[in-house]
Length: 410
Image 1 (cartoon, rainbow, N blue to C red):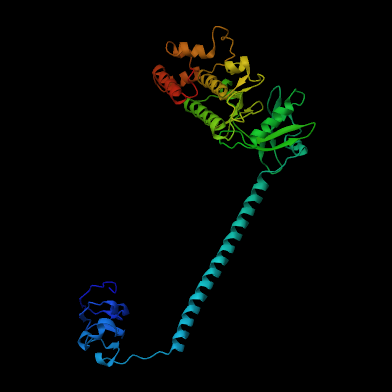
Image 2: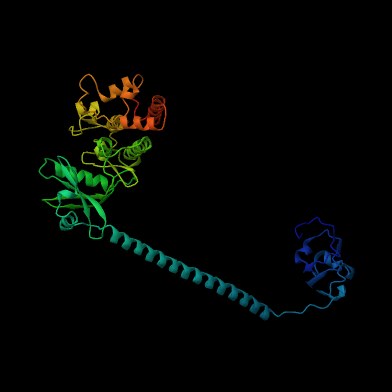
């Protein structure tokens, strides 16, 4: 209100107002009527400006007001400059002490929280160290696999053998032991170590540790209790239902998407096939065996290399020219997708120069789908009285739609 310079009349009487009359009202030059009578105001009445012309009637009924005798109010007590300065010093001191106390409490709280976090981090690191050993020695692997006993042998190939092992802390692992008699195997071991130590995805095999010297090289991997997809497809003791097969292929597609686009450097697996798809206890698929994988660094989309992949799953440009790109994995994925639902290997005796798995599926799916679909799945559909032909046409059409980026050649 002290800024309302053109204010002429102000009547605030009988409003039960408290507090003091602002000193800034003295600046209202045109104020010719002012009435704050019968309130509960206190403090000194301004005496400058327009207040020189006001009378006691403007202030009557405010027993706590004080000022000059003309207003017929009590005289204001004069506070000495010394006491005023002392009051200011006290106020400043209280404020300063409050600020110091607040900063001290905040700093102490910060230290306590930091220490707790540090202790928590140390406990987590210690717990992780106790669960996953940083380094596993050759002798611990020998002990864990019972001296690489054959009854602990999962599988064997031309370049490596995989054993089940139980470490000293009770953790079950898979020990992938490389055959050092194979030419170039040391390079494959180094490539797999380089890739596995960096990639992280729920559908990729996790590496726990490695063991390496001049006479022995092995990777210690996460144990997959359900074996591999090849075992589930071709064993008489196991059978995958429709949903399980679809889920497995979705898991593999997710892993491929991560390798091709989710990592800083595109990775080409180069050897996708059912035996390299491992299954955990929840039947989640994990892509494994990166021994011949390729890193497409320096902005390369294609690299030239020697052909090492498995026949039947090799993309034509890879098998004929040695050109490696992410399209090679796409081709292998498509072959494996058809194999998963037909239970026919691309190397089956029925396939030759004039007929391939891809051609067989392409020709038969529209005319004789019963000849294409895995017999076990057809039998399951008969048991639940579902029209297998209509159902399978829908399923395979849906799969082609879902995986169109991978199967545009189908």
